Length: 151
Image 1 (cartoon, rainbow, N blue to C red):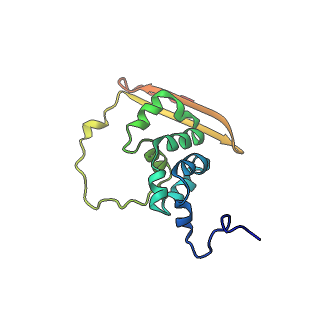
Image 2: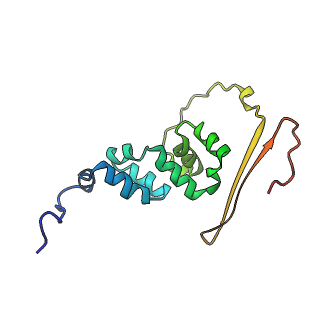
Image 3: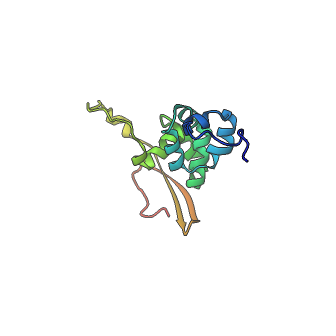
């Protein structure tokens, strides 16, 4: 006979069951084991999971394991300039996960912001789930002499 403490009431919604766990357990033992797509899906299931999944450290770990080149300091600095840092970077890389409604109006954009003195190219190549190349190349753009192949 199963103990009533170990049995989840069949009439109790799962979202209520997960919210009975301490937030530290969810953050350190559950959310850290998810890949980015699964974390994004879990975050959409309840307000508790959404608030717990907004941690920058969690998304940095996911990005670093998905793309090792994001560990490089210049890439870290660039990603930290995104509105939600690593979460934004991941969401922009998998746009189907981004369910935000886009504004229907056009934004006034200052094209002078497009001028940059440096391009950062980050490449991570995997073959059969094994990383075979992770490289970051920084190219200065002031002279506009971009090499044909940096990799």
